[in-house]
Length: 157
Image 1 (tube, rainbow, N blue to C red):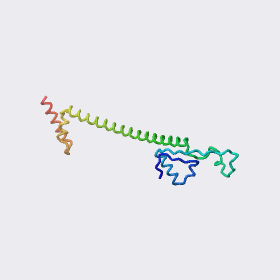
Image 2 (image 1 turned 90 degrees about the horizontal axis):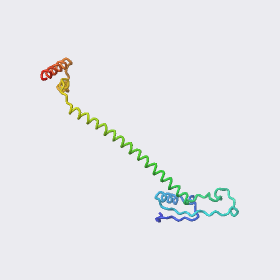
Image 3 (image 1 turned 135 degrees about the vertical axis):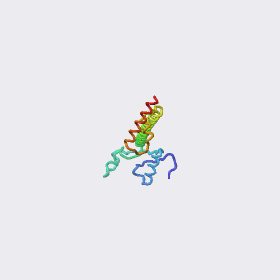
Image 4 (image 1 turned 30 degrees about the vertical axis):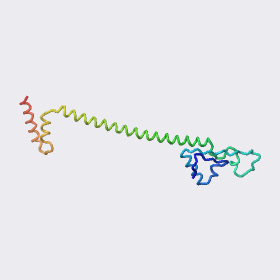
């Protein structure tokens, strides 16, 4: 494993590395360690022998890890990080809005309960409902109890 902060490679293409070295290079790139690759110096076209792979003989087509490729990799990484940050921000904003809705819901319920406590109307019907809470009685009994409570409240006033 390479321990240095910089990896110096001369006259090499990324494809020329063995598979294990390529994984090391990729791992170093992910960690943000600088990889210095000196570009392949192209020879003049007249001096190069004609090969079957014409792309390899053309200058500027070698896949070196030069400054430009490293900047592209950094930009891609920054874009990915930015997209991830936007996603987490959206998720957190959604959670905040859900919590705000819950807060409003519980505030309304609390205000309703406070209103009921403050404006406790002792009407004949509310007295009847308190007396008969949880018991099953006929409608006739309910009507007579309501009538009784109404007569009692009228006689007090």
